[in-house]
Length: 99
Image (tube, rainbow, N blue to C red; front, side):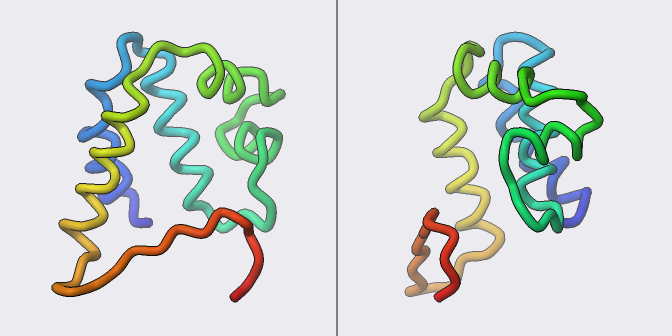
């Protein structure tokens, strides 16, 4: 994902976070997800963002106050607007196995 696209996605979801710390960490989290990391887990995502442990990323996912459904909807809408094709189908498979 080009940085400009990441910025546009983050601008779209930023209002779903009440505090600036989780808002910024969410941007780092998404940046790590789209980075070319071989493995993507709490440790590697934290290291990618310059943190020394995964505690902050885990806090974002477990305890931070944010509109989860709103973020999902915003990201879905962004994907449909920018990657969608008429009559296309998006299939999400989180198993990590090559198909």
